[in-house]
Length: 260
Image 1 (cartoon, one colour):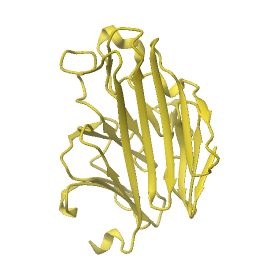
Image 2: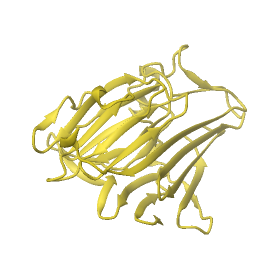
Image 3: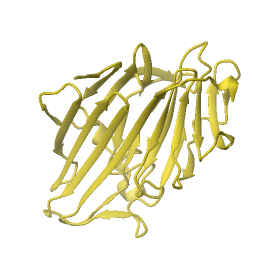
Image 4: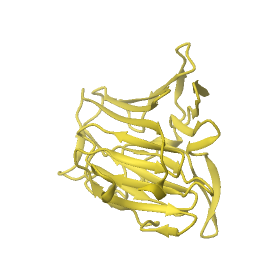
């Protein structure tokens, strides 16, 4: 399903309620979804999706969930609201009694992503550690790559990937950053910046890429990594509802990285 608003367009799918690509004019912001060869093996990349019920490697007793949960492979039911600027998907989760909904809203100033999970009370409490897994596109030459900034000023640049200088400070081992009250800013070369406006229950950010010249994942996590299924982790109680929201605020750049 295509969403369109002004110069923005996004392609979304009922499979996991995923974003297959988000473009501003001819420039990719997220995606595009693709199969790419990593260490000799074809792998799925570029598809922005929600990780549910877990993010990261679970303990042995939950190993069947995998690193990012099975939700990405669940075919949800689309619900159309008569607009090409909003998409809504819903369905049952892996466990009986869990209902999950995903919605996306595409505006001229950004993109809203929301996961809502409700425990209907038909089973005992279940562990959760949700995360949003967006693949930010690294633009080709001459657009100077992609930068990630966490904090109030540009002196706190965390990591970047460029074609001119090669990849720096980023790789296949995820870097986990504890989030404070500041926005996370992704500067996509000379094209735009996207600020992640996140709620208080988003406590950590993971930054990762196995092909930093093509894409970089900047993943908001709603809980402490490594605590899934433990007494210290988040649990969804019968009758409880959890909502995870990510706002991607878009701004066209008026200056490029070389002027900083």
